[in-house]
Length: 97
Image (cartoon, rainbow, N blue to C red; front, side):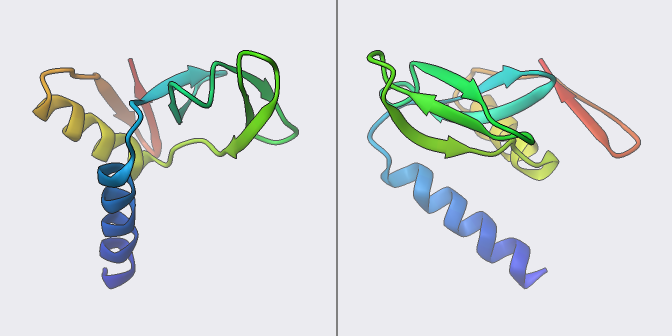
């Protein structure tokens, strides 16, 4: 439980200090948390990661898909901002729209 709280607090503090707008991008059935300024386009990498690219095609960072807990946290934070995402959980699979 402590480990989950530490990870969430790091995740929350990282979001609070970011000056760009982040959003959940749906790619190949998974959600990725990316920002507007540094991820205009993306390229799929082997596995499930994406390489974010600038408008000029320069690589900026690699992003992994969000975990089910991160999707729920993102949904809750967006609901507080009146921008909701609907998530459905079936067994261990969470799908958001």
